[in-house]
Image 1 (cartoon, rainbow, N blue to C red):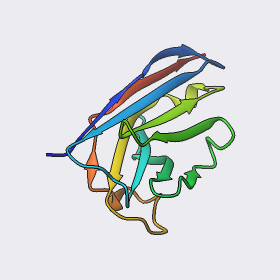
Image 2 (tube, rainbow, N blue to C red):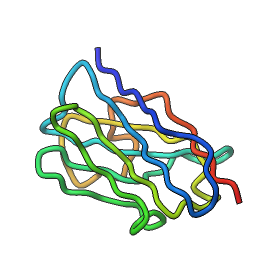
Image 3 (tube, rainbow, N blue to C red):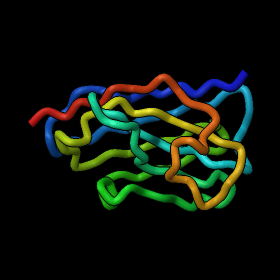
Image 4 (tube, rainbow, N blue to C red):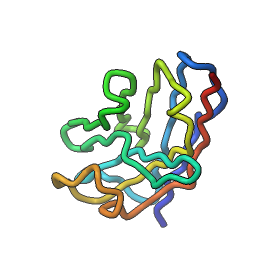
Length: 125
């Protein structure tokens, strides 16, 4: 049984930083893609960042480019999201997602098979 467990969320002031972690168990995604999505109240779930496990290629939403960094630890089967220069509009429930393949549609949430339960990030102004 595949499980994705997020951690690292919390309350931070504008300009602060947080590091989210997503630990995968039940299988590895060595041929696949792992990503982060977020959902604010009343809004749709949106793409934040993704990483291709095999070659480390990364993808970002324009709204977080230059502030967020996605990375992976192969040995620990874990993906990280380093979030710097946080803004109130970054406030959301952040979800980790995974799929067992790579294609160009890394930003599309419907292409991901596995999801975590989310971790809350709140940025105060």
